[in-house]
Length: 139
Image (cartoon, rainbow, N blue to C red; front, side, top):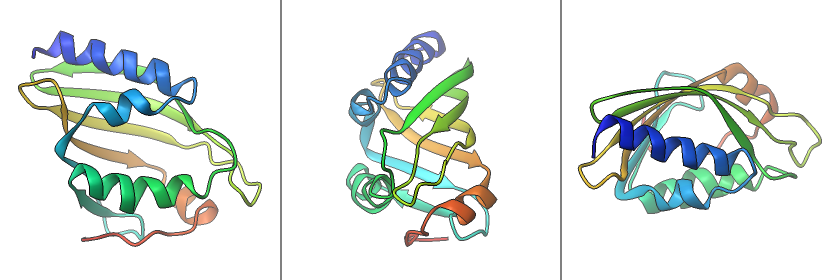
């Protein structure tokens, strides 16, 4: 896959996420997909494998949400096997707090056009203030 194709795929995925539909995002994960939150904060970690991402990161995270999580892409930049997405998320937690974070996601694709790795940069202080920390598998 080329940069333009990967960018178009992410545009479609984020169009769905803007409506609260995460199915295209999940479908685009390769089986060996890796989600990385760099740093040394409590939310930092590395989740390796699609099943680990789904069960140990996303399920515990989504369990804290009272509304559908929505994410709107503001800018997408593609080069080679990488697409960078600046986006804004929006959701209300079960405790009634707004969790509206800003993200920069660096997404690498494999040759088949599946997401191989996502490195997420965000406001970790907001996470610590609003969300219950989930256990990171590694630092």
